Image 1 (spheres, rainbow, N blue to C red):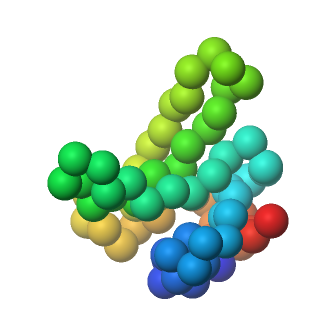
Image 2: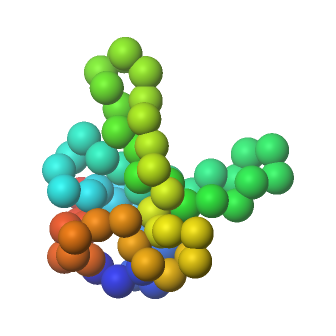
Length: 71
């Protein structure tokens, strides 16, 4: 999926995963933020996350855009 496809799918309410179903892409708008994140839920032991893109807002944090898929 391209960056635009990922953002459109999340905005439309679809669940977008990266690499496996443990990673989910979210759009965080809490407290005035506007950031796209890849979140890993560690089964009740907290969460970890990275930005969907690098600081340039274009380069995705992945080896290949094909690693993203909808549930």
